[in-house]
Image (cartoon, rainbow, N blue to C red; front, side):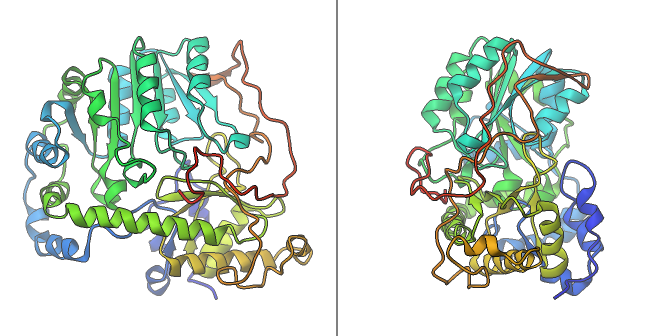
Length: 456
C-alpha cells in the first residue's frame, strides 16, 4: 500500500534527517496521520495527554507574551534537578551549547569518538579547530574503550575530549564509575565534555549521570537535552552542568531571553509530573526490550545492544539501506534513520527509535516486504532455517540477530586521524582496524556489554 506521494529526495539532503514539517508537507494528510516515526528520537509516553491539554489551554498566552529571562527559568529547573542555579546554564537546545562551547572553550583541538552526533565533529571543523577522530570498532559493537581512547588523546595531544554517553547512534553506555575515572585522568586538559543527552533512558544503573560530579571539577562540562528526554524537540531546550566559572562564562554569552515561552511553561510543569516522567521511562525500557527481541527474529539482521531510546541495526549484505529506507516510507509509512552520512558508518546501518509494539509490527512487515523485492528470491533467508514470509513477531524464527556481532571493519576506511580546516591528517600512530569477517550472523547467546540484556 502506498502512503502518499512522499518526496524521498528530502532524505538525501544534508547531514541530518529532514524535519518532520518538511517531510509532512510532501505527504498527504492521511499519510501523515499514519506515519510511524522511527527516526526522530522522542519519548512516546511523555508529556502526558493531560500536560498537552494544559499547554493547549495556555497557547494564546504562550504565543502572545514574552517569556521570563533565562535566570528565572533556570532557577525553576534547578529546583526540580536539585542543583545550584550557578552550576547550570540553559540554552535554546543542546546544539546552541555545543556552538558556544566551541567558540569559548575549545581553543585548538578536540578529540571525539566516531560515529557520534554530527555536531561534535562539524561545529569545531567549521571554526578551524583540529578534530581528532577516534574510530569505534564494529567488531566491538562500537563500544568505547576508555583506556584506549585516553592513550589516543595523549598521542594526538588533544586539548579537549568529548564522549557521548549514551552514544548516538549505537546506544552504548559507559558505567558511571568509568566516566568518573575518565574525567579525573584528564584533569589536565582544557576541557572534558560528557554529552548525556540520552542518559535518562539508561536502566543499567540507578544513578548513571555524572552531572553533580562536574560541579566540583575544574574542567568538566555535562550536556543535557530536555527535548530528547521529554519528546519535545520543537521547543528547543537543553542545559549544561559545570562549575560556576564555566557556566558563568557560557551564560554571559547567551542572550538574556534565549528561551521561549513554551519551554518556560514546560519547565514550570515538571515538578507536578515527576512520577509520570519516571513511568514513561519504565514503559520505554519495556518497549526497547520487546522491540529488540522482535528485530532479532528477522533473518540476517544484526541488532546492537542499546541503553538509549533507539536501537542500531545492520541489514544483511545484499540489502540496500537507502533503498529499504525509501521503500519503508513510501510503501508502508515507516520513517527510519539510515546512517550512511554518519562518519564511521555505512548505509547498511539504520538507527531505529524505540516505539510501541503496533508500530514495530508495521516496521517488520515493511522490512519483510522489502526483502521480497530482492532478486533472486530470498534463498539466503531459507539457509537460516525459515521462510521470510513467516510472521516475524509470532513465528518460531531462529535468533539470527545479536548484539555481539563481529562483522568486519569500518568499511569507509576512517582511521584515527584528524581533520583541520577541511583536510585530513594521518596520525603518527594509526589505530588498527579489524579484519574483514564473514557477514553471516551467528547468535552467541550473550551481548558482550557488561552483562546487560541485549535490548538495553
